[in-house]
Length: 333
Picture 1 (cartoon, helix red, strand yellow):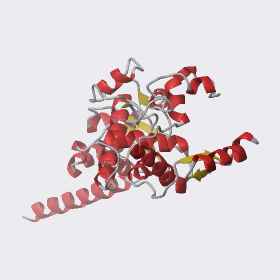
Picture 2 (cartoon, one colour):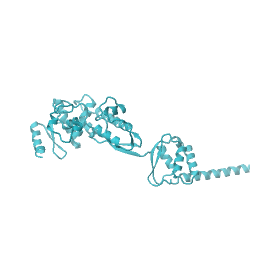
Picture 3 (cartoon, one colour):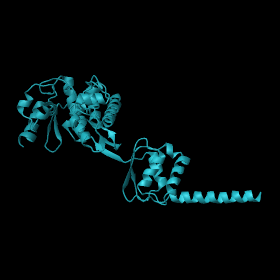
Picture 4 (cartoon, rainbow, N blue to C red):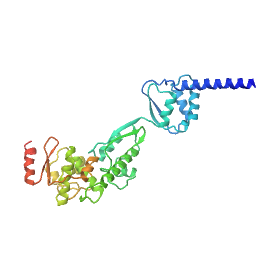
């Protein structure tokens, strides 16, 4: 009986020593250096991950540290929680800490900002140029892109929400664009549900078109609602919108930066100097502030506005006042 107790005691001591050694080894800083990264491919098992880390030379006390790490992964359940992705391994990270980092899925995140006022084409170009987005789209055709993100038949302009998006390496261009389109749909639905009464829009899409015009007309926050008020009153009175940004959008690549009188006199779907009502689609990516302004236009009587040349605008109620403002702020310059 004493022999059995002795054996049990020795076994307990050995187990305790093993646990203490494992804990010490698992919490030693990895020999990864500063600002190291680790790429975990989809389907990587715990044993494959341990081999990857060991082969990189990051583990102290080889080979028992690799064995400790594999056993630790199984005992804690982390072996079944590993997530693919690119991970930043900071100086001082331990083997156990690395395993937890990967199980938590705290991958390196990259950023891409879609800017308010960009066109769909500009947004698509930025997505295509980002080195960490995986390119799967074979065309830049708007209709084909919309079909790829599950919105077949929807006009692409204005359908991506301008914001800063964070994503992990190898996110596909389709996944990124679908996320931006989902965000625009949610934002528009939220703002539409809180719209003012009596607006001249039959659908949320028409409000989105108005918001895109407001976005291009002013970048001054406090002016957005006032600009929207001018255009809403024009629609309600049956006046043409007469806004330069829609004409410029209609010109497309033919626009050389100089909007001329003959452009305003040439008929086209987006020429609001010759056509009544809203143009057939948005003309850019409007932000939430412009969407909200289109749905909450400022009350008043102004029907005209002209740039003062400093980013702000002079608003007028009558054509006579407007012509005077044009002479003051535009013709004299």
